Length: 239
Image (cartoon, rainbow, N blue to C red; front, side):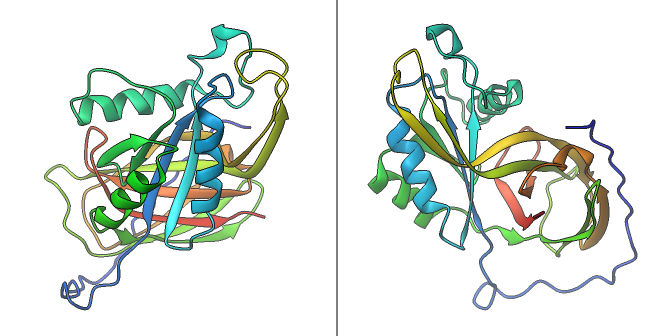
């Protein structure tokens, strides 16, 4: 994928009052699974994430980490940013270690990725997030029209992440703990990174996201500084 080109153009948007809590529509719940093809405990979590991804109320993302590669099988989907992001959550949640399969819910809590009852409890208890409206304004490279609604921002603003992913991936594992198994994955992250600091909302942005070219879809995550909880999120298909 080509190097990300980022352009953010803030357009004049009249300040809008926030909806009352009673009438406020709940935005998506973001699920981030930190997984690896080299981890024998991960396939059940991969299957659970694939099921959860079918729910229109969630944004499910599969971040493959590289720290299992030394066990005999090099995960073709592993990215350095995946473990960087996982460690960022560990710091934010004051955890002393990272593990797989780990599922982070709304950037605010985590559990073992194949523990369905625990995952469902965290989804039900997830902090409310607003919906980011995302549309494709042009292709090759993708240009995104982004609208972030009025919401409460922390002092200094919030960080906007762009995540490009493919809907489905499958590989026959030839070595390591999962040798001999065909592993299937949903919403596999192929590129992720921060693209802006949002200091005032509501706002409209135009994003040129060359790194997303070749991906099936992109998600945008607005988070508190230092990888805090997700404040708003949205996604759009590229093809």
